[in-house]
Length: 109
Image: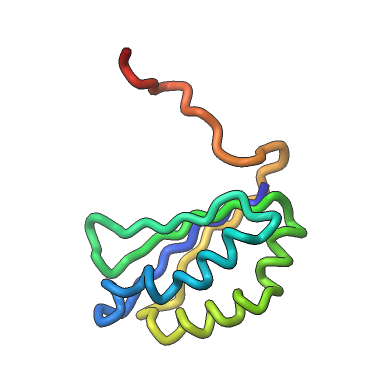
């Protein structure tokens, strides 16, 4: 699995509409055959910061994502709304195929 985390600092005038701006890109990415997850979160400390967690089945799926038309369109849309170059963590996780259950915590009966 390829795991990617990206932090986006968004211009204040776009912060409240960010998820709408990236909605087409998000939907298209989630529909890709090799996409495992594609989830946005908004910071509780900074209303202009969003974090994207992405999972792709393998390097080929990640490469297909970056080569897609919707990726190019998404980058164009985001470039007009970000305040700084995003920060990224990109990790190849062999043998992992998505989320695992956390060992240390379970719901109480």
